[in-house]
Amino acid sequence: MSVERDTVQIPDDLAFASFRQQCESTQGWQQKYSKLGVGVWVQDTSEGKAVHRMKCRIEIKDVPAELVYDVLHDNEYRYKWDKQVIKTFDIARLTVNADIGYYSWKCPSPLKDRDVITLRSWLVTDNDYMIINYSVKHPDYPPQKDLVRAVSILTGYLIHSTGSGSCDLVYMAEADPRGSLPKWVINKASQYLAPKVLKRIHKVSLKYPEWKRKNRPHLKPWLYPEQNKLPTMSLDVLSIQHAESLENIDESALSEENASDEEGIKG
Image (cartoon, rainbow, N blue to C red):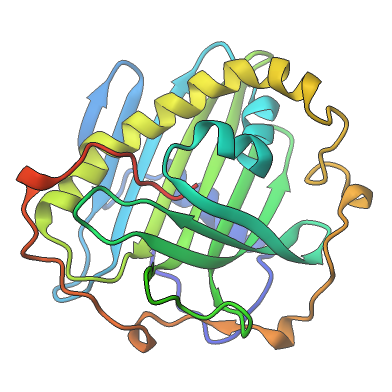
């Protein structure tokens, strides 16, 4: 499952097909949670590796796939529902279905907050809507002193339409959060935080049509590229963000007793 990159490239159809296959596969995954239409799976990583692999799936019976897709794209709406977002914005456009973006989020106390710079790409097929990203280095957005720069190796969403008003939503993350995290953090993320966030996405998707009617209802640059006013950027400006080049913060001794119940999952 691990993706090794040496150069920055925009994902092609094969990359999306591989992502879909990983979202749907059960081989090599261990189920950690299953309740009321929500499931969480984790995958063991190599010994000594900091990379964590997780996916979470929720059955949504009252929201169409295209609406959930809009919710996940809409940065303005994210500020309304994502309790953990510190700052999120798009930096530049690469193609009609790829851009560079910044996202920083609050982690459960007492962990340090994280941020990430990613190349994001999206694809719509007959029954599937996919958004995937991976970390890149941008010369104008170096790591900040008060935030830990995390690394997304492959993170994204698969929204599979199951009917005119229903869908399955899968969130899959292969990431290096940096920092020698204690085991309780990983367990909490997979068994508690991920299901909570997907349930929240379901809940806020129900409210999105009403909110969007009052907030630039026709603006959807992820569907209509001609609306995208971001500056264009060449791939030559970017490079792969390798985890080894970032400072590693040792948070392994932090106690769960002092931890908050905040949601901390990158969208």
